[in-house]
Amino acid sequence: MAISRYSRPTSVAQACALLSDAPGRTALLTGGTDMAVSLRSGRDVDLMVDLKRIPELHTLGWSDEGELTIGACMTLREICESTPIRERFPALTEAAEVVGSYQIRCRATITGNLCNASPCADTIPPLLALGARIRITDPSGEREEPLDGFITHVKKTRLKPSEVVTAVIVPPPPPGSRNAFMRIQRLRGHDLALVNAAATFNPKTRAFTLAVGSVAPTPLLIPDLDDACPSGATPDEVGERLAERTLPHISPIDDVRASAEYRRDMTALLCRRLARRLMGNP
Image (cartoon, rainbow, N blue to C red; front, side):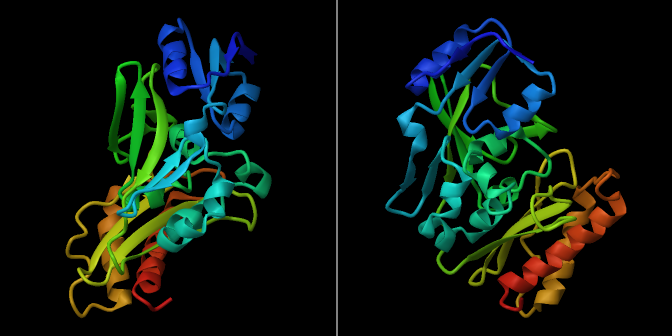
């Protein structure tokens, strides 16, 4: 492990300028929980840019329409303890609450969880299901893009070396809609998800969105769910439909924590459980 240069800018512009001028390998630091592991594993960094002194990245904002903006340095503990987030986006707080231990959540950030791009990251499925966007800043300015498609493979994203993810933006849920997160793990406590999933349901339009994790190289937003919940369908019938639409898209692996077959079975189980919970039959 070696860090050749360490810098703590006080503005996003300064951070982007540092990254743009850096000649070698760079790293961004918000919480550092995943970064610490990679450094101990032998990662070398020519320039580490610590974003924690940038005030605008420590903000949580709501628009008049109910859109949520989460600054890049907001911790998972702060997400968990926000009553408005819990009331409007329970899937997000439910996911944040199972990441690591309390001590980890006091340091880890939701943006770090996204940019680490782990297939089993717990906060990504709810953000995908909720239609989240990310705000990216580089020396030329800022832009927003959907979270869906940002992660390209295991531990890989579309973020360029001179770019910084400065915020996660969650659009307001439709009135009366519901959302939830669930996961399967080996142990109670601090284990990684064997499978995780999040869904939204609008009783008025009977529209479902569903995202799953730990069953492919990236967390997946499942397509073609427009007719997954026809009028009169029971929660069990909808759960089976969600499972049928989901399983063809996943590619789970065998590893020391679970077999691919078990992950497929648990994905179907979470589809059924989410349908029951969101349709009022937990």
